Length: 441
Ligand code: GLU
Image (cartoon, rainbow, N blue to C red; front, side):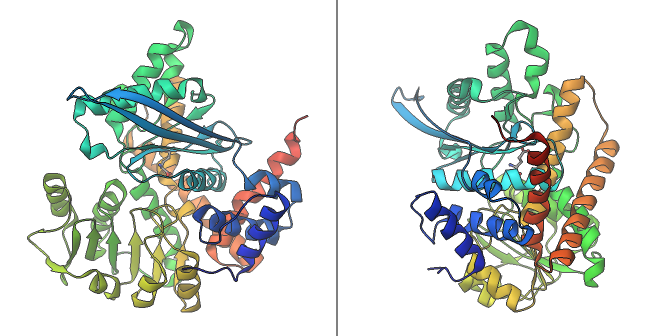
């Protein structure tokens, strides 16, 4: 169990007392808002901004019934949390997972506010989730559930209001069904712009070049911007990876092109290792065919303990939240932790690693390539334009490089670690916008 002994925890505790809200030090939302408030304190922003950021604007919870293929009925539970929209429409993914909880969705919506602000995108932050294991549904059931979810969300989403996108357990096909359902419900004068209600759509139906690989590509651009300053060469390094879904597999394929060596991978099916390097494309093929990394023929199976203790330059968690806890951190042997997933490191693991001299590249910087190309998709939809892959890559590189520089510059100016710096840079921007806009009424 993690205990509360840091300035981050103290800031969160104070504000929860003020709001007369119950808090639990082990809760992910409490821990995350704590880090955000620590950054706000470092900047000495007005107290009202801390109050505004501490709770999301809207927490929407829905239930809807769907008849399954065998004739039985199931009731589904869904959430959409809209954290903040001072910079523009709410933006963020929607995940399908059997164990989602409201506080997890709240945390992810807060991180989206920070992520969009750090990248200086004209968006606020939101996140959605449906409690379901998508692998347990037939394609027909999946489509019905997705369409019914979209209808249940109704006017809570929209291209000028709140724009979902893929996340864990959702993909381009699910986005296509969401967009089609929304367009069918929308006014005839708004059908063209209605396409922009979700991003991450298939290329042939309003999607963008480069959206599928965007999170991995953005991460590689962040490494390009930051590794030279750490005396590391992307073409010479070794790394390990947790998760081989969209983000993990694209990161691995793009790092292969750059000459980095993937030594070990772990997912829900097990862990594998090859001292000569694992071929990222062959592994992607294997995962597509079998559903996981286990039994990949060009690597040996290793225990989870050996996975964590493998000596590497970069350790890249690209799966769910809180996968790296203190126990794992104590076994880890890496120079840099690169957070490809959202909130993958517990506060105690983070403290331990920072004390040991491990650099942590924070998630809101490392994985913001996804929402950045979502922004490009939304812009193309609004202007009925199609940008080519080179154009997308060049624009993405520019935004990722600028965000990485912003984090470095803020860390230096405030003399803090990169996580606090990434939040501080985001909050600084939000603060300026609140100052010019004012707070209604
Ligand atoms: N789900 C992704 C994230 O967590 C993408 C969000 C988006 O494209 O809106 O950043």
